[in-house]
Amino acid sequence: MDSPTPLYQNFRPPSLADLYGRQITYLRVSVTDRCNFRCTYCMPAEGVDPVARAALLSFEEYERVVRAFAAIGVRTVRITGGEPTVRRGIVELVQRVASVPGIAEVAMTTNAFTLDRLAQPLRAAGLTRLNVSLDSLRPAAFAELTRGEDVARVVAGLQAARAAGFTDVKLNAVVVRGVNDGDARALVLWAWEHGFVPRFIELMPMGEGERLVAAGKSVPNAEVRAGIADLIEVEPRGKTSGQGPAVYWRRRDHPEHQVGFIGAMS
Picture 1 (cartoon, rainbow, N blue to C red):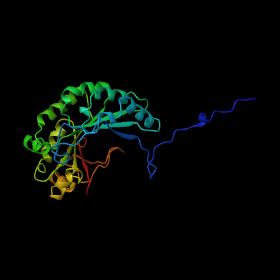
Picture 2: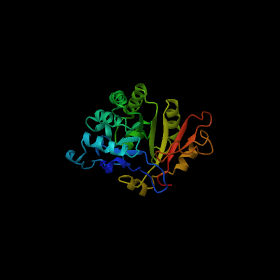
Picture 3: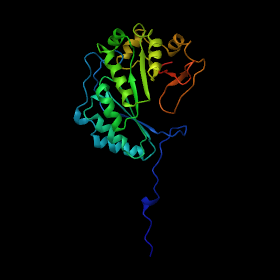
Picture 4: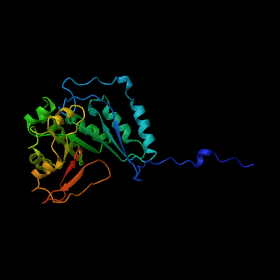
């Protein structure tokens, strides 16, 4: 008598798709709620009570989660926080995620404050892309938005990232009226010169941002674009991929350069 076919033999793992049938291949993983910055649009000056360390997933648990999602079609993992580089052992965690079968890209959103020493180890561990928060190149404006931090440390981190071989680096700037709303042109030209992709994000009424929005500090993307209209094409390029909310415009005289806008409010 033939043995029965095991029930699991015909099992096929489900795939992730939204209500429009689009396949979901992108997973964001928050590894800490701690941050070494106190940006005015994000966190109170005194900070917030962090989650107890014992409540965070272990590296082994993060790896299990990523393996489970990779089995149903996830191919890109973005590591976020808080500020992910303050998580002890972050290089090891990146290596664990990057080594999961099926994961093709590992990205990170960071303030770049410690990239001067971490860029090379993170690249070697398998990190492929970076999103760096950089609201202004002017030291005074940057210090006002971050409550005293030094923009030179972020620039040094970006330079280290380029030296480490990162070729996909996006710069995220939250625009706050009266602080950095006149800095878009300088930031865009500097980013293009150094091979980065600048992106502008509308201020959102979340956390400390709610107070700023109520005070009329939000700046719509259309206003930012108007300030650099002579630099970019009339029509947007659109999305460069299915990941992320940004819509991109090309540079007029160098179409390979682009600038992104995330219209969270408008």
